[in-house]
Structure formats: structure tokens, C-alpha cells
Image 1 (cartoon, rainbow, N blue to C red):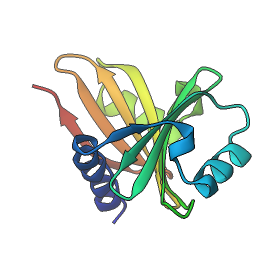
Image 2 (cartoon, rainbow, N blue to C red):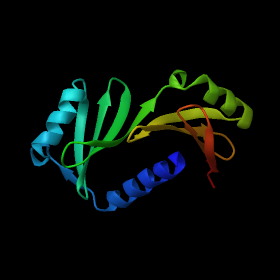
Image 3 (cartoon, rainbow, N blue to C red):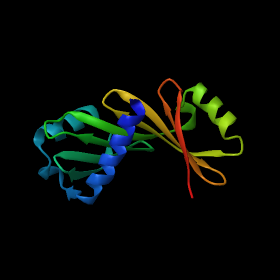
Image 4 (cartoon, one colour):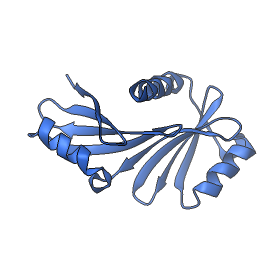
Length: 146
């Protein structure tokens, strides 16, 4: 189920990008802006994009890149944030060392859809790969790049 939700999130994100429209903060519903700013007071470099009926916001918190999707009523639907390797559960690091012994971790995203958290890890190697894990450290899938 978690893998399905993750797939739907990425498919929806890809679909909406084609119909995306950049917005100024004044063009975003006031309720969405208020909920976002109340919970992200340290956000910098904030950019809004309209995707269908929803609003994607891209921003930075410190040295982290973050994206979140809000409904028009202000409900946070999903988010993706870049995290550091030391923030991954130890079970994931151990599994990566086992499954990908000749690979180096390049980029890690924590993906939240509703309340479900998954991790997408980009791995440098031959060929490059991506691996997905759930929040308990359970391996979900891997994809090798061509």
C-alpha cells in the first residue's frame, strides 16, 4: 500500500508539472499561505506553483530543500525534503551496505504522503540506482538507471 501511495504521489507530481503555473504569493489562497507560514517560519526562497486544484511550494530551510503540496483549503497533502545520511534509520544504512556494496549514497529524500513516510535514496555506481524504503527500514524497491 505504501509503495502504491508513493507511486501515485510521483505520478501525480509528474502529471501536474505539465499543467503547472508559477504564482506570486498574492495569487495563492490566503488560508494556504497562512497555514504554510505558521508552520514554516524559517522558510526561505519560497516559490509557489499551481498544479490543478492544488498548490506546490518549494522552499529552503537552512541547507535543506523542501517541497510540499497543499489543497486549496490548506490541507498539507504531501512533502519531499532532502535529508542527510545520518538522518536515515540504521536499518536502511545496513541494508544499503548489503544490497549495494560498491555504491555511494548521493542524495536522500524523505517523502511524506498523508502520514506515510518513505525514503528515496539515489546511489552512485555502475549503473546508478535508486532505492526506496519505508519508515521502519523495510526495503520497498530498487531501480537501476540505463
